[in-house]
Length: 139
Image: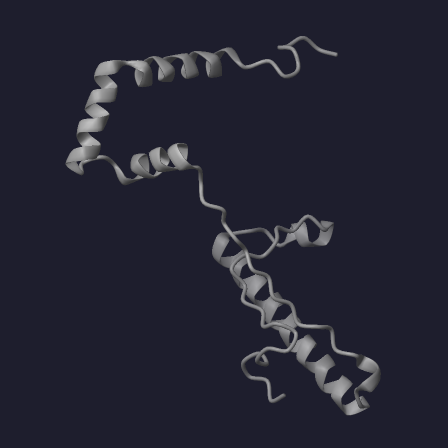
């Protein structure tokens, strides 16, 4: 292995920055000024939020995920399956068109697509499996 700092050790710049910050927050004058600003309502909102998080902990962020059960294709008629396939094809066409539009807007070269290294599309709204059909669709 090459030379460098040992695995798990703290970078000297990081250590110095932490020591500097600790020196500031341990300073009684700084602490008194911080209290004065907090009491006077002039404390930056971000700092106030951090103080509350350090004091009582950060609230748990809950993510609720709802799924739609997969449709049993064995009970679908051929016409229903064909309509569903057309719907999926429309969604894929919209996604491809939006991806190409983003590549043009962002100046991304189309060559990475050929190599499989194309960036993932962003900000593309694709309806869910049982959502509204894509615009322009008659399904």
